[in-house]
Length: 95
Length: 156
Image (tube, rainbow over all chains, first blue to last red; front, top):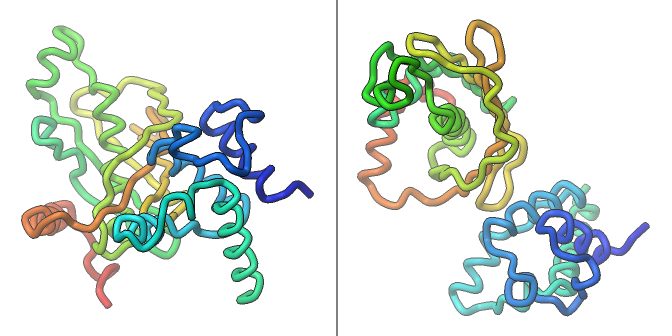
């Protein structure tokens, strides 16, 4: 089974037509890959479906806007994948 | 339907918030200034207004599912297909279903039929925003009454 990063990178590559080999764990979805908020909705949709979770985009956006978090915490891909793994684990624990 | 005011939906004929589906009707008028330009001698409902009709049907569905706590705003249109013309005087039966409710956004699939025949369909994405002000909320409440929005579906 491929890693969370591999799955997310494939989703981003296919959804946003970004060459797969340019996407790394240290890529920032917004600053490095140039993904805008509307394109990120498509990515969130694909991630939600693939992992059976609901990315809390509103909560994350609010935290960034309030200065309680940085975009790097959620949108650098290795960090995004860690959040996904946490959500998947929490879902498994509550099932 | 009042095309000039973007009043596309005439009535909600079925809203099931548990199944996350809606059915509405929209009666295309015989005359409208829109038809004077689109097109002289051959009036047709513009494709963008068919998409708007599907978006509004989806919007009522989302308002019901979200119990009027958020306002859906059209953000993306995918795979829109106009499979046949819609003419003045025709009755559009529009169905929409919720495909996915994410955090702050939702996706729907909608179809327009006339006389049972599919005329258009699309997948639509909406952002779900807090009502920006009381005016917009009261405006939506007024339209909800006009189109027969079943208030019992959102009552506690």
